[in-house]
Image (cartoon, rainbow, N blue to C red; front, top):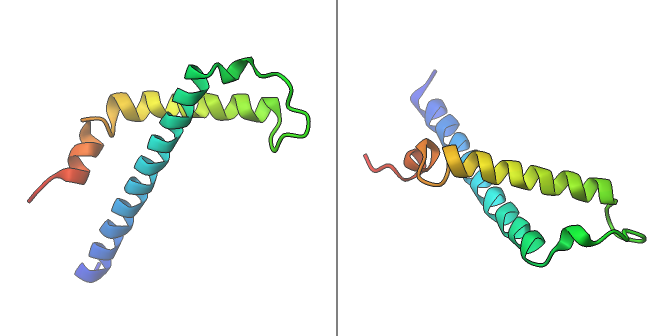
Length: 87
């Protein structure tokens, strides 16, 4: 594999990791709003852009992301270290 191709591959990996990090931060903020404003108590999804089942699924995904990335990844873990490591 040519060095330039490998460098491009590494850049793509970093871009994807940063996109996951951004998505995780946004999901954590939404989850915080859900919890702080008791959004789980809303039961009327008539005319809403998603169904209650879809919303419940999203909140579960957001919680799983925060739990996984928060404990083992971006918050001081190996992924954070890899993204911020200085040569």
